Every structure is written in C-alpha cells, then in structure tokens.
Image (cartoon, rainbow, N blue to C red):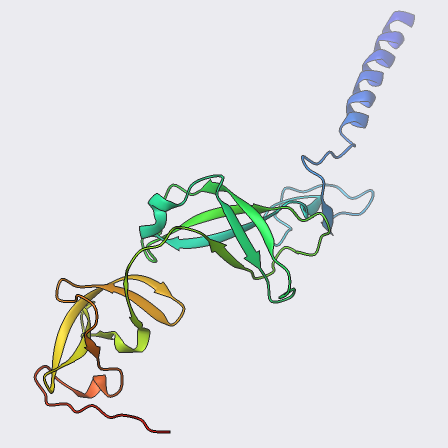
Length: 222
C-alpha cells in the first residue's frame, strides 16, 4: 500500500512540475504588451479573440527595431538589394531622419498593382517611431534619363487600357500611344518609340482635341 501511495505521489509531483513549467509565458523578443484577453483563473479557448483573428492570451509589439514595408514598381526589382540603406522621414517628426536597412525582398509580384514588397529594419532605441505611423522612404536606386510628364496629360482610350498623350506639331494635334512605366507622385514616366524628348505636350484642353485638329499655343501673361 505504501509503495502504491508513494508512486501516486511521484506521478502527481511530475504532473505538478509540468503544469508549473507551462504557466510561464516566454516571448521570442523584447516588446510591449498591447492586449490582454484573459483574466486570472479563466480557461483558455482556441476561439479567435484578437484583432488579428487569432487565439491568444496576450498580444505584443516590438518597438526596437521597427519594420517598415514599402511597395515598389516591378521595374525596380533588379535595383533593390538586401543590405541597402534607406532614409525614413515622418510627418510627426519632420525635422528628423532615420536610417534603415533593407532586410527582406518579397519574391512575388502583385498582379493587380505590378509592385513588390520590400521590408526595411529601422533602429528605434528612443522609441520615437510607433507601429502604425505613416512614413516616407527614400532609396537610392541610381539615376537614369526618362520621359516624365504630368499625370493629367496621359489619357485613356475609352473601353480599353490604351494610354496616350496629345502633342502639338506644326499647329496641329498629334496623338501618340504611350506605355506607363512608373508613377512619381503627380507625374508619370512614359515610353513610346515615337518620343525622343523635347516635344510640345498639350496639357490644357487635351481631352477636347482629336488627332489632326488645329491647335494654337496660348501664352499666359502675368
């Protein structure tokens, strides 16, 4: 009887030790707890209970370093390399600039936007930057000559995906089909075998002229 009771005690002690080990939560990184989803004594349930749609006891975020994700046009894919430096600015701290490092380049292209994602790691020891902030990221991808026009001058043929611009040549309008390569804020980089650079672009009333229509140049005077 004694041996049987001793054996039960030993088994109970092992079970208790295992339970005690499982009561310690260990995070894989240093961070800040942003959500607590259970109180002491409550039973855990695998039902999703977090904004991310997962089941958890608590949620955490890492403040230092932070990660910023940017989407770049697919034409820049050969130019972006892991280890590249990036400059980061925010509207919250317009006078300050951070330096980050490209540490991950996603291997797939978004078919809808023709962009790929790049992840940049930013040291944030003073915790000025916070998750969810909007930031401007500057990457030095080199220089090249390009044809760049105001986005309002690039028109789209109704019912198609064809883009075109209207030029002024010898007093008449000439339509030139173009391909959009990149967007830079309110400007577009375009390409066409008919364009060499230096052509006169119609940027007022371009929606109201057809190929071959007579046009006149109006000079604004202050």
